[in-house]
Image (tube, rainbow, N blue to C red):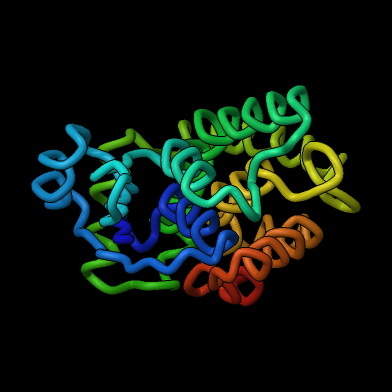
Length: 228
């Protein structure tokens, strides 16, 4: 299997966590933001990553979108399952997956890139890194005001997680797509000291999930504790 991705994308991280949890061998092809369109649009008809190319008989040639990738992986290799057996619990897990996908993943992007453009610039001050940050901020309209609104959504999500993650799972009594999605889409916050110091339990849980899914933590993860 081949995963077309941005190496820093938390939505691509979601797909990698799923592949890792199921211990499915795969390779990655890192694309350049902007230029990636010429690679992925002819394949999926979309402009977004991740895109999975299963490269296997009796499988679709292309699976686009992290949610669809997980759905495909569940059908391709049901065990270990990221979905829950109980119908009502699985419905809730999918609801939470959608909530994190549609609201929290976007909010995390705003907060993260606002941080990286300001006090977090020292994490990687290279011209290439700063150019990518500038492109993303312009593309999504990220500024101090929009990042402030996004931070409020993040606070709401963390309040939900605080009820469950400190001693359990988001749904039911085992790991599911809800936990995986939360860990992936909140991962950019791991580089932001304010979050690392205020919610140590959150990042301990995220670290555990990355270990469970055989996925390395984001690059510069430790910088979140070292920057003041």
